[in-house]
Image (cartoon, rainbow, N blue to C red):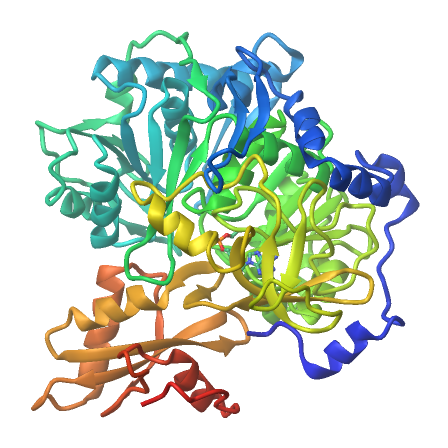
Length: 636
Ligand code: WTA
């Protein structure tokens, strides 16, 4: 992974490293001016800090207790309170001056745009709430959403939250098999999809993929289809309905469900170390507290600003910082459906100029891709509106950081390198705009978060020494459990280092207490920022008739961060060939989706294994990269 090389490490550890200090203007505008004092104060009493943060939201009934740790690690926040996530993101703004602000600006690759003021968004969502209630949707139901980055995905998420149904958004780049697995695990009753989505000028027929998933999902009673591309789609009259017809004639007011603060708001599936994705559960009360506080402080939002997060709503970054975060803060969220280099490599910079974007939140892989096209592309555009930049998804290598700072931020906009996870719900280790920055470091834990770098026994690692990144205290927007699998929740996150949340990442701290995230310790890959488990890819290979066994590793890639390399044992009598390689690559694409691109396949006779038969991916990786093999005592 292009994180940090030896020369850079020496520089990091010497105290002479250049820090990028915020300008006077940034400091004078900042929502949080006294960064160090705020950190100290919050560390003294995190509960008090979060209780104060919760006052930024509206509650139907206040809490009896801020934090209930009696059944830890099943922590409860704001117990006894009544509230609703959608109410706070939307209803709360109606009747205030925010209702006239734009809530959503949408543009697609072909240049079509749609815009919604808060009041309009509120009415759209209410129509959908009424239509959903009309078909019997209610509190606690699970509703799957498999849609591109279009306004209807926001309508659907918000409508679910408003009626108290649990949404499960599945990224539209996942395959039919992956969608079906997730629908089955959650036993979803309703599915939202679209006819298609634009990608590099081509239309991807989402409805067809959704249909093939629904075939094996008996729980789905209704499929609501947004028209996005005028694609010809097959319709199953007993189940399918066009979105437009579904909401036609519905009233524009709707009652909001009163939820317990601990009621689940959504489940979002993410990859772990087994072939079965985990349904990460987030709650109505705590989740928005963490999301609103971070978006306001990290990105320094003021009110009527334009916030552009380039992720997809199908990932946690999209949930927290395309949909819920900007709406909780009452600002405008920009949704772009398409690739960043169509029709030319300046598409992103063109969008920033056109809409006067104030905050850009993107991923290192995208910055590296733009770097490759060159600085002449952003130079074509005036971007004085930009104030703050953000990075997320994987470690940002110092050279990409510097390029981003110079050519996009024009040496003026601080970069917020935000480390967090699907499970954490919100930014966890990140600077605030007033912090001095070091390229490649995510700086310090957000106020109220106590993070540490430790060895296997939980002992703090000295400065400069790598170790496990853990979080010592609970926080409001944390994962509540793994859907229908509380044991796995405990095992994955709370049993590796005693009393602490185990992130699965390795990091080190420098002499100034700055955190440097190094990547995963487990078998989770980050392919262009997308989270994929090696076990998922292996099980996909093994489902092919010619394959006996597969071992999969991530190898460094200059643009994507990591790409997938596979080692495959074929059944006896099957001959390796280029055609077979192609077929196997397609197999993974079919079972997981186009995001799981296989860079390379080696056919082998044996895989390195432990005595208990587990594939030692670490050994495969060391061999592939020509690194020392490390401890091989358990290798057979
Ligand atoms: C990685 C994405 C370094 C990390 C929000 C984490 C990062 C995983 C950063 C979670 C960052 C995310 N620097 N690494 N700024 N942000 N990661 O669940 O390995 O898709 O554990 O959430 O991404 O990925 P997820």
